[in-house]
Length: 327
Image (cartoon, rainbow, N blue to C red; front, side, top):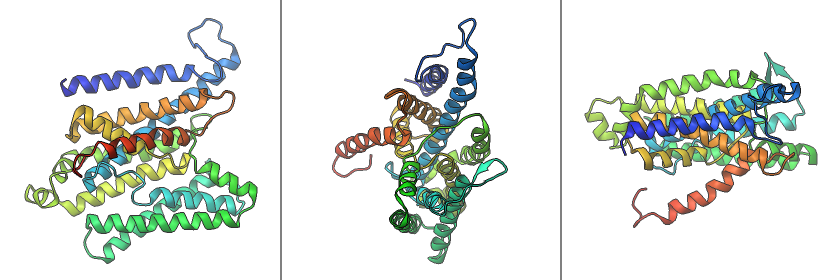
């Protein structure tokens, strides 16, 4: 099947999910019914629609960052959390809860500011460690990210150990990832980061294609490899850092969506990038809808749903590897 048709089908599926998801929840709301009760109208337009749009943007951001890291490391199992940005954000959020703070700045919750600050500090630490080794080598970048990831995870465990039952539970609950929002404020706050990161990556699709062939060949074709990797690193970190800051870590979306799209549409990032954006968005919207409707009136954290799907998906990828070859 030709790529434009496949991309059109993914776009149509995304539109269908965006149209259906707000109608589903504790009870079904049909916005086209004459005389829609005021309470149902408020729930639909001020709770469900913002949440669905927020889920779509977060899913698209995680998927695009995963696609970027997979291209940069030339490894389809790379995830948006490979370089420790998620752990840094989680550390910031855990520290905020442990300190018992409660404030907002310009309408942005304090936990979001702490989490985003932790993500950016992690980004800076990984970059500085890589520069200390000279250059911007992929292996050094990966090892620095893994080291920072483990260090932040250890500090989170230490904070949880020192916390009381209430704070410890709150930290654990936040780290499950959730999309429970009311109104459009969070959507408007995360949108600039999404547009900036997606915009940078859209300019680099040709360079990402060449990076897949190897850094030496990319250099011979005129790609400024070090500059391109820095821009990819910045854009992907902005995307994942902003998402984790606003809704906690949501795993596996950034690994599954790009890989599925690569199987459907191929490795050419000119087609893969928009397909990944659309599929990642609809995938997280579908997972969040499932989380809202499985055990009403309670809600399952969406990170639990994605993890339940991602674990078996990872095992399938592992078992389908042939002779140790790349996926």
